[in-house]
Length: 381
Figure (cartoon, helix red, strand yellow):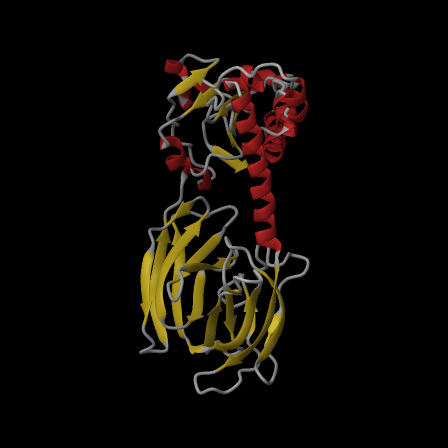
């Protein structure tokens, strides 16, 4: 076998393994798990009305379906009957949360993980589920400014018997919480917008019924601060613009649309995104606003040997065509390889729109930003 043939075989083998892994991963996240168990209280009595789910939607205990468990249209509903028995189907993902169950009074709780039969490869929840006395943790999340949208999530890691996470999500109308959890050691991580507070370690020993945590402040990042002047980015590489001119201040005087994406090779940019950005280059009011592209430009294929012509291999794995339209050549394209900009702004995704003085008008998806730009231009006429 020649070196060229060996390279082709390795490439084909790698692709096959990737496809196999994707199929296995999908199966792992969608396999139904039979639940046939019985909720037992501290004194051995059956517990009626215990409701289980993988994701709790608010401090008050309302439900919010998980990403996969099982789906938003058919949310998980497992409630114990008068004999404490629960039966149904649970879709468990290794990357998701364990089941969390509370009784109606929130005085008893349990975390549940599926068991696995190594012979049949069956996952299941059977037998007794020991409900434990709870302690109510009370606190308030606060931020330095209003967040739009106002998103608050608290993540708890239950460390016994196996470290797992369960989430408590908060809406825009409240930031206080009262969570009833069994004794244990937990890590509390609070978030709002793009910001996150340092983790708090909470030890619940069961010696009291309530534990007051007080306020927890969540620092916000630049993308959360609507109406404030966006701090300058950090730039390590610039295309279509001299590096010494690649500061945010260079784009004052006109509204500025900044689209954050991956501009490397191979391209991961959606075709709809390319078309929308290209349309901005011929916008009727093009001279009235700036557009900047921001993101990595790494060439992941650089340095690889040129693939020789092979009709059968090219049929199975056709050579990728250059993406069109070439929006990377239409606007200034800036990159920051240090992570400074991401730490300052938040996760570098979506699109930001700034007014002529550099104040942040919005941050979201590209279509919403273009619509906001059109409204802003219309209002300025």
